[in-house]
Length: 197
Image (cartoon, rainbow, N blue to C red; front, side, top):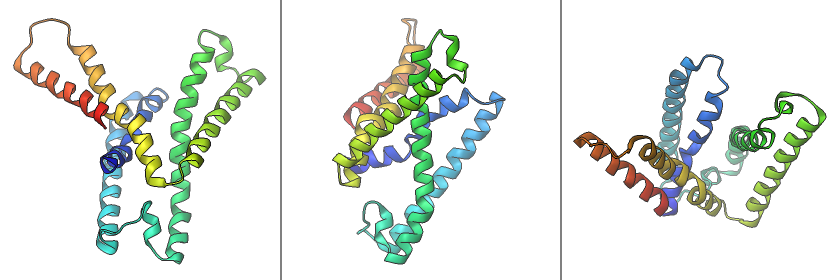
């Protein structure tokens, strides 16, 4: 089950899509940007997985950068660390922004650069980063951290919530055609898969 959760985790970045969609100057660019992102992401993931599997075989360490020699390990981590930090910052930004908007909802201070607004943003950011650090330090095995976060969040955001949203938006007690019935079944299966993972 951890292997499935890790695959789900690899493609769980879509949680941030809507937060960035709301900040685009021209929302018509969203579809093209999303298609380019997904195409490049899948290409890089598949190419990396194939190269690692061909060169290392079935004994790949977790994380896979630990499977190479000492020199290449340092070079690989030097290249990978900025992307890992950026991925963490993107998801943290989405979470901080969501909390910040709920705390300042209905007040003019939300869009100001006042001391209280900046202090609140910094406090929420520091709190979330501290909690992430505590979780990361309390679970020493990298694969277990990925499995835990994927099971708690990624599978829920990837399968269950989209299925629930679709059902909420499209099932209203009206007569259903065969296509609608198939889509209802598909989304019910999505919800069950998200709960199971």
